[in-house]
Amino acid sequence: MKKSIFLTKIFRFKKKDYLYDNINIKKDFFLFESNKKKYVSLYYKFCNLILNEKKINKNFVKKNCKKFLNMKGINLCYFSYEGSSFFKKNNFSNLLSKIIFFKSFKKIIFDKTNFNITFYFKIKNTKEEIKKSLIEIRRFLKKNKKYYKKYKKKNFLFKLNKKYNENFYKIKRLINIGEIMQVQLSNKFFIKKKINKIEIYKKLLRYCNKEQIYFFSYKKKYLIINSPETFLKNYSFLEMFPIAGTMKRGINIITDKILERKLIKDSKENSEHNMLIDMTRNDLSSIRDNIFNKEIISCKKIEKFFFVQHIVSKIKTKRNDDFLKSIFKTFPSGTLTGAPKIKAMKIIKKIENFCREFYGGVIGFYKKNFFDLTIIIRTILIKKNKVFIHAASGIVKNSLINKEKKEIENKIKNITNVVSLL
Image 1 (cartoon, helix red, strand yellow):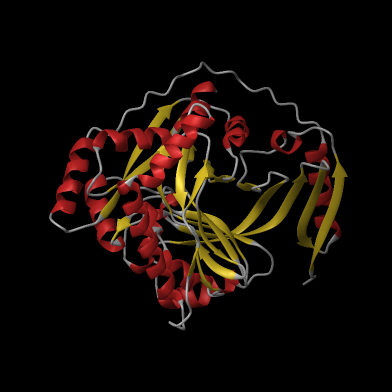
Image 2: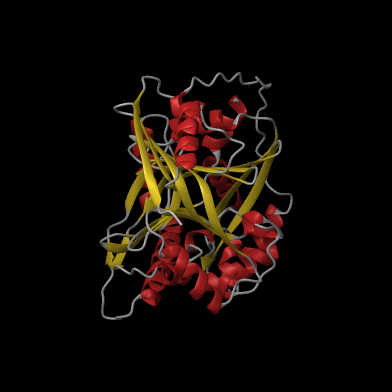
């Protein structure tokens, strides 16, 4: 067999939205926008490994997963919330309730500052493969005339699940009798509306100041992820970034500062945040081989986004190159379940009575020596002509139902604003 080669081609363009306008949304792809918004990376032509309930056993993980993890280059992965049942059997209802590892063979990088577009294709070293790839590049470079249909504007009406009030008071009773400390009660919303996927992604970029934004297309299901929360990073340290404690933004600088101080002094929001710091520390300590390695905790900071501001902490410990061990000891994030974690997950399963699928899962990049994973929140799922949105709020002893409802509304405001405009 002939060896594989890398075909690299660089071109220059003036148009800002050139890459977005040429994406074929019928194909599976993974689009990632960097934090600084200087580069856009488009990955496609995948080979993948899907884990379901039949394949969840130690021997399978050792043989197959490690082969996939040791592949050269940057690879992609998707873990659904229900994927946490890797250590607890569960019936997977659909594709979005699984764990998927991806290896991409074709990558396009668009430099927004210099307007360079670079093609990286891993192909077989044959004349036929090289010719096919060059034709594919030429087709991509041609001006793609797209005429988007205009649909009627449809305002999003904020309605919580009918059982939200009942579920809220059930959780409060469990907290009062001491069975649980905190539960993240989520809500699923959907809008029946035809929308342009690329346009919604481009509009959400305006609301993306510090967040990472992904566009993930797989088997005619589209996830647009505008997440403020990094789950797990492994570079020079192994790091986690718990976010808990939410307040709306002010109309101007003065009111914004007043609300920031109110958030810092709020006993309910601080107790919720401290609980999740302790849980994150426990998760990290369960990974470490040497119990004497100390965690480093940065001070609580207020991070501001378009419609909300959050209390954010950073906890780091000695780096760990075992990707599978790191993720299965810490996943899912305590910020999407509650405290204690396993007990909270059991209560969520009973009370919510629906599959969370993508919400509360993780998506990101991994390589042999590093990984960078983002929690899937502030996310839109588009399938057929329906737009699905999830949001949750943390219920503790001092929680008030009207405040929790308002928090959920503020969290999805950037998404609902964009959807209603299209």
